[in-house]
Image 1 (cartoon, protein in one colour):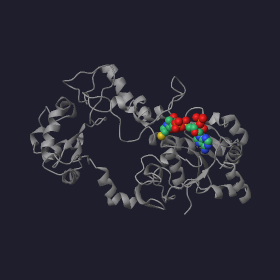
Image 2: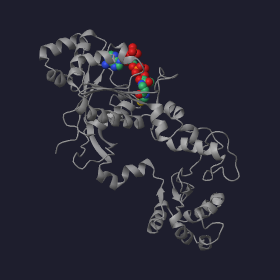
Image 3: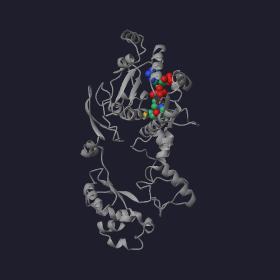
Image 4: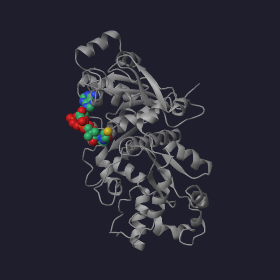
Length: 415
Ligand code: COA
């Protein structure tokens, strides 16, 4: 079957996590992604967090599926010529170097436009234009500067970063959407354009509800669904809300049977208004369904702590899976806290291709997260990540270089 992005060629100048997540998605949708790396070194993640000596790390393999790898020294004059040939042949250049690195290499937007006016140049940077535009940025810096850390954690503790890589992978997702949108616009204009996804902006986009709450707080001085209400105090900025749901339906994480020894024996429980009577029945507090102090969502807000404590008495008598089964029967929204071990072993995720086992020539078999976006006419086949420079000769031949020229360039250290 054909793929959605068949025929799109991506010059992948990305490294670490944010850029590679973007180009991996494009590769899964069928684009030919040619990853440019430095000979002898490659993407720094090849050797970071290694679990097997001298073998590409899981960090690298899990972010670079379905790509081809070529080695080019883009600071070598002859290597630069190879890169120019690639720019002329590709549709999109994706990069997430530190600010200015591409310009310092000699590949300014103007130069790229001269070489290929149809080229889309897509960049991840830590910050957009402004005071921090020249800063190097990693995941947690973005989480801190984008509003995630100040709004995550508990009121009596410090800011907390999330395990979800919203700064890196989140921004990679944003960039991928920018790229396909620019490709679509190019079908009309015939021109390339620059696409920028700043990590601070990407994180802030994902924290949109917290800017909503900031303005609610400024107007009313309180937020009744936050755990600080009614007994705590609110300051000037949106506080950390613990495990509160963040939406109009109050929720919290509750202990389940076995919590004393299993750090993940918990369930997320949502006291959704339409099923309140059912919740009361399940936990044996039938009287709350009609008690004026508990019967309506507004009446319940000052009592949320007590309500969740009472529900927890019930959840602690069940495992998280038993609780799920019972609550789902009554359409009560809830979710088990799943460990990575449980997720890795979940058969339904294997069946849908969300968790995939991949074979690798030097690593052997490993698990990865497949494409979370499923297209009915463009199914994803996850192929292993390339070894460093595995496709250099193949890509050079496609660019018209003869075997002798390739060998001379290799001797000159250009590839
Ligand atoms: N041939 C020759 N030189 C190459 C090359 C190649 N194939 N590929 C990269 N380089 C050079 C670059 O030109 C740059 O050189 P310069 O500093 O002399 O201009 C150098 O390698 C290092 O690039 P840089 O991006 O500065 O790497 P770093 O390891 O110092 O910084 C980051 C890493 C992630 C902090 C930085 O790239 C960054 O802030 N990126 C933008 C935000 C981002 O994506 N962050 C999240 C990463 S998950």
